[in-house]
Image 1: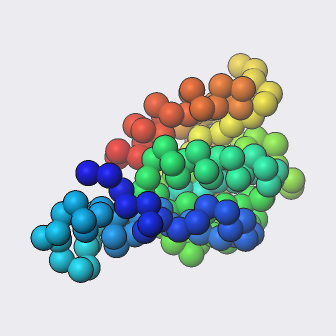
Image 2 (image 1 turned 90 degrees about the vertical axis):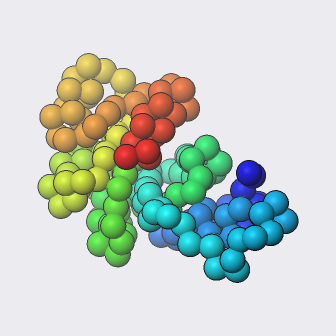
Length: 166
């Protein structure tokens, strides 16, 4: 069965703090499955993902890649830790993808705060700076993984696949 792309919201709205919900009631085409009732209820709650990245272009690229690689997801975006914490308070949070280099508190501090406030939330830190010291600091702060931005699509895919299945 293929997802019905007419049910997916457009990915071009880049409103600050916008929640992009790729899982919708009509997730599967009624033309393929005519016996489905008009109100299709997903069996489980959609995984909630928060992307914390200050650069608009990088955030847009991550959003587009995540929503096409791991649908259905409920995706939120933030530019810094303060904005991320406001969004996290509005709905349950399963997963956070955090840039190390953020304005104000950095990604390591963000990981520490997210893990303390939301212990069930999986946190992955990403950075263009890839050193063993940063990797260890991220893990010590409670991050589940550290990913170099140079290898982001290759390295993040198996991590996301594993975490989204939980």
